[in-house]
Length: 546
Image (cartoon, rainbow, N blue to C red):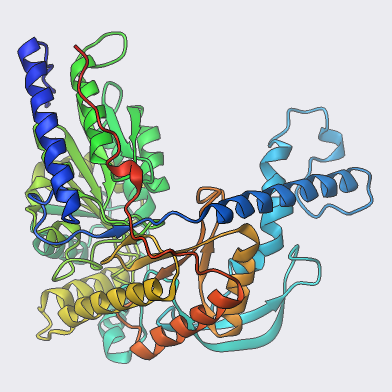
């Protein structure tokens, strides 16, 4: 088991100071050229996190303050019985018990979320392709309950699903292979992989996936969330250190917590913040005992699903090599979506897959299926087969789903005898750059990397979330809106997901609607300053103290 070395000599400290100074100077030069750490990057790396004008921040906080005040007023009215409370409450005979939940925990749901919850959980009655059909519903009690009108809203443009490559489809020829496997194997397996649920299709998929990713072996799981939450505890435990990006997905956070390892968080995509934590871990070791950490595991995502940013993989790999740490890369949103042939951020940066200790991804986005995978060295995969709860206790993936995944991977690799897979990847890149460029030109503030198909458009004010989604649906455009507490209180947003299946006409329809709403609702906050987040490179000194 790898153990990190502790730097103890004064000479070693001075050397680290010199390295830090040289590294920081190089970053400053690269920043002026528009690329951070240009020596590690083989292509331009442009990300935008423009700050909102001051008046927007003021009105956003005022909006939350007004909503909170009226919420407390309505709670008082409910307490005196002047208004019926439709939400969960303790039974009268249990009033003296320890409460199952705190009253304030439901305050936001009762008084803020409920007012706009008609914009979530909308029932779709078709395949979630570039367009879908929606069941219309209305509420007669201010979104406490809903009833269906019986009307179907046809051909709503889907700009919110993670269908990056357009493989969530029902085209006959595409579904023929899946249908054949369904006839052969049935729908369910009713067993785990280690008992009676290990089919030849699973082995075929894992071998094909390993070849696609360029690694020795891969292991497939039935649920993407559990791929993270159940495998991280098998890799690290007590006496280990996890360094996690502050904007990592909940599945990564849960897996880290379940592992029992010590967790420290670094600023989002900030290699300087990460390096400071690595240095401290090497020098100081574990708390109290000062022993070296058994393992140091860095947790990052390929594309961050709420920010649209792409991990600074070359710099993080350089750090993990320098400090002898392990790297766990979650490619949930990036596999299939970026890279010349859809092989994720590793291919996007032109890196060697062997530089990543644990490659994780899911089939729920670009592949139009369900499940997840862990890939890497054969020793890693063999270890997880017997030690991962997700591999040992979870039901095997349905053969029909496996065939869908195999079909999409073969398409991306060109093994189906066509260039359709490459064309989809190229179309996604073209659509992404066009959509982002037009939004910038229209004056909206959007976050993320120029090549990320996840496009957050900042709305800021809580009152505009519901109004924006409703007005877009009136124009037959389905969007996803996200607000506090899922985002920082100041950064409510609409999150668009671009797909290769979107035609230019569809994108222009969305852009025209956004242009109109942007003027009506005053959403065009951009001052055309595409500056990066200041905290990325504003920490001038991370040298170790003498």
